[in-house]
Each structure stands twice: as C-alpha cells, then as structure tokens.
Length: 348
Ligand code: XUL
Ligand code: MN
Image (cartoon, rainbow, N blue to C red; front, top):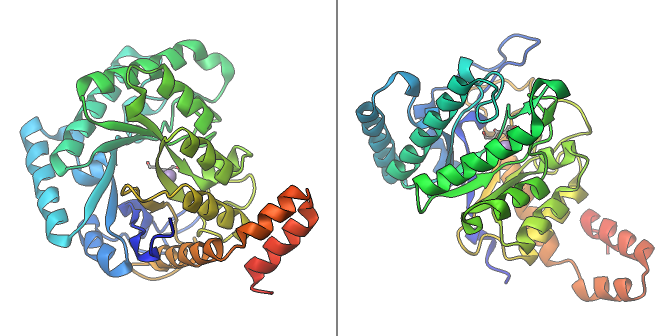
C-alpha cells in the first residue's frame, strides 16, 4: 500500500481538449487538431491515451482494411515516439446514420451488422496500436420510449455481442462504461450492477469489466465510490472516468471534485484502499473545459483535476483510520462526519 503518488498513471482522450461549442451558442474555442494534442499529454502529466476508433483512424467507414491498418501503425509509432500508452479503444457507435437508434440493439438488421463491423474494426485497431482493452459506452443502446424496442431482446443482443467479441479475440478485455441516460432517455446498461451481471453471464467473465465514470453514477442517483467499491470487490474495475456532476441535469463532465469535494474524496479513498493502479490501471479523467473558457488549447481542466486528485490522495493517506475505527465501533457517525469534514478543511 501507500505507493508514491508519482506511481499513479493518468489518462484522457483527445475529445477532452477544445470541444468549444454547446448546442445553444457559438464556438468559444476553435477546434484543435487531434494530431497536435498527443504532444501535450506528457508535458501535462499524462501518459495514457484513450481513443475512439475514429480518433485513431479518421474516416474509418470509407477506408479499406489495409488503409486502416496503415493508419493504425502510424499512430502506434507516434505513441512510441511520444512515450504514450494506448489505454483503450472504443467503437464510436453513435455518430453514424446507422447507429441513430442504437447499434447492437437497433431494430434494423443492417444497422446491427454495421455496429458489429465497427466493433471488429475497433478490436483490430486496438491490437494494431497495442491496447489490451476496448471500451463499450453503450450510448444509444436504450430507448426514448418503452414501446420502441423489445427490451428483453435488446439485453439478449447486448450479451450476444459481448460473447461475439470474446470469441473474435481471445485476449481482448471489454470494459463497459455504464450510463443511465443521454443521449437516450433510458439506457439498457445504466449501472455497474447491470455491467457485472452481463460479465458473469458472458462466456469468459474474467475479460469483462467495468469503467466507472463519476458523473454517470451521479446521474443514476448513485454514489460513485460505492459503484467503484462494487466493481473492486469483484476485481472488475478496468478503469475510471473521474469527473463531477452538479445534480440531475445535462452531462456536465465537470472538474474532479468541482461539485462535491467530499464525494471526490470518497472515490479516491476507495481506490487507495483497494490499491487501484498497482497493476497499471489508469486514473482516467473525462473532464471538459467550462463552456465559457477561451483559449487554444485549453488544458487547465485536465491539470487541475489531476492536481485535486493528488491532493485527495494525500487527504486519504492522512485520514486517521484508527480514529475512524473508534467512531465506527462506537457507532458515533456524528463524530465521524465532523472529523471527516474538518480533515478535508485542514482543521485539527
Ligand atoms: C459519454 C462518455 C464518453 C465515453 C467514451 O458520456 O463518457 O466520452 O467515456 O466514449
Ligand atoms: Mn466517460
């Protein structure tokens, strides 16, 4: 336990830099080319890169298998040159015409075939760049109204897809990132409980894990640290997307600790207690710059979230666990709360 904080490895994805517009206003920040983002990772204190399939291979739908493999090999070389590790690749199954109503759970057989094709390409790309996992954020696998899809069939199709992936590649891990809503009204895999049920029902549960995003848990009305603890108790926390969310509204991807420092502290404490990261797991940050923030490139949200994470690691390590045990034994949770709040405030 208590590894040096420098042993934490941090990651983010290129989408976390410079998406400068929201649906209601002008672009506040200009687009910043992906290729120029990779040079920023190391200087900012990040060594892991999270990818969508088309972050690695832009225009993937229009390219031949050879062209895809050439581009993926170029990215592999770039990563090696920059000293970066590809953490995962995720099929972007929400931007194509064929995935508007979901991929794996679409009512259309041709759309489902397209989703599978993209998934195979994603696995091939993950192998080409040396990533051991793919992430399934099941963005549009859900419904806007109950009657639109047969939910039981949809669940069966998701499980069948997981099994097909495990069959297609005997080594790849699948990390499912649950989220309860947005863009759909009701997603089929909203929590880590759903994720792990799918894992255990699959043909090789050891390769099916979860990626927990703080904001997604909060949108489900759940505590992110409990969601993480559940996955850790099953040794199934593939990665995390730390961020924050101020109540039930649009998906905010706020800075880690920005809405509720105590909720942030408890996530760090749970990760620390489980020695998360000791087998190379990354601290992923899925944070977005504030909508009003000017500049190019804007990166402070990433470095600030990383800094707050490390401060909370210190808070976790200086939290007096024997005192906590005494309060637990006495069932004196009022004293436990006061101690915790004063500890976070730096008051003795
Ligand atoms: C969506 C979300 C995605 C995934 C990767 O809310 O969190 O960015 O993390 O596709
Ligand atoms: Mn995420």
